[in-house]
Length: 312
Image 1 (cartoon, rainbow, N blue to C red):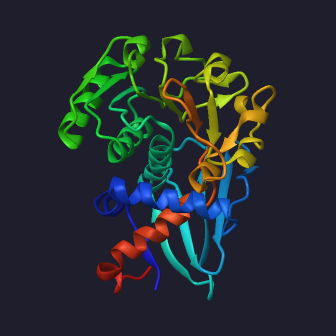
Image 2: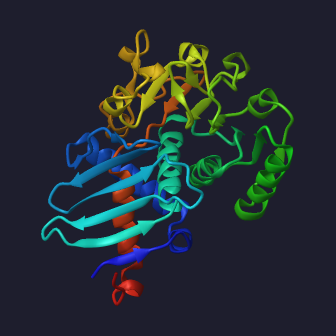
């Protein structure tokens, strides 16, 4: 039987700890070769583009996520999970929530692996859905005592701070500048749609960890080379995927490419993460292919008692 899962069901069933745990397992599976996750593929269709990311957890399942860039107001992502033994479609998730939580979960893993153990303050630039899930996941791995947020819209950043206070129980305040958002912060999240830098790396406090979620390519990036220059630790969830970006991803080009590490290898203990309290660490999130399907499989297992009679 095929289970059809909505955004509301994802939001109700997938909490931050479970999402972070699933993404940690996915990164380790990728590192050990059990999760086959090739770089994303895209086709131009005239007026828009269809993009596909796929993954195969060897011996268990395979599946894909599909989305487009046509810009229709009701366009939704689709994630499809197949049984690896029979090929049957086990589940389909429609909407944005699964992908957004997946990205937040990857960010939570990065914070847990790379931020200082005593990290307790977080600054975020951006106030959209991706910014929210980054804070949501970070709060699951560190006991945050304050969040500061800046975005272009004063109303949206005030609403974001109010949501952090209401839903996460963490003191939060909106601030007027990006500098005020990141100053004296242990963790910084960049989650904007800006094609130009929103951050001056000189404003970062020694020992800070940065999650970069938005644009990060040559001539289209929410941060500049100054951030990469300051980074003592520079990792991605998929260096191979990083190298496939068009235009190229800044961190995957010289002189940074030789330093760009794999978050999975840090988790596995085969590569160092942070080795000093004053080091700045940077996680360039690219969304390891197959992780949405990995999370959908986890969600189906969580929902199993209640969806056993559902069918598509």
